[in-house]
Length: 136
Image 1 (cartoon, helix red, strand yellow):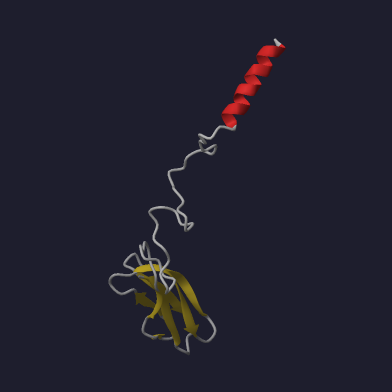
Image 2 (tube, rainbow, N blue to C red):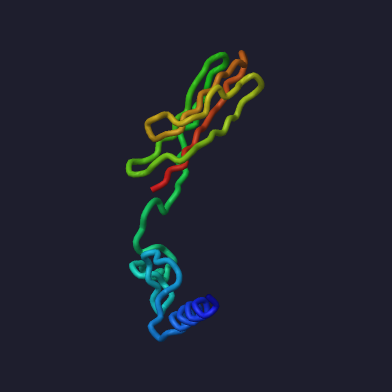
């Protein structure tokens, strides 16, 4: 029995130390070249921008017109992203006296950001401006 174990162990050691080396890690489908980059990937450009671009590279902020909401009324301001870009978020700025409040601030389902303002103040107007973040 000991002899069988000894022979079996020696066989495994010889196989592991042979000149015909096989990789011991699982293959993941990627080969690494001598330069250290994975095969099929492009080297970074000097401007540090990807050469095989996927996704968005630029985010801009677009503003609506400044909307004045008269005393005692409601109004809305919508900032719309230009064609070819996608809305990623938005916000608003309100210049008002007391009792004016933002009712909603949300996407308008048409590539823009909408803000609804209720000016419950009976004497002074309020102003609202919305902005949208657009990726292209």
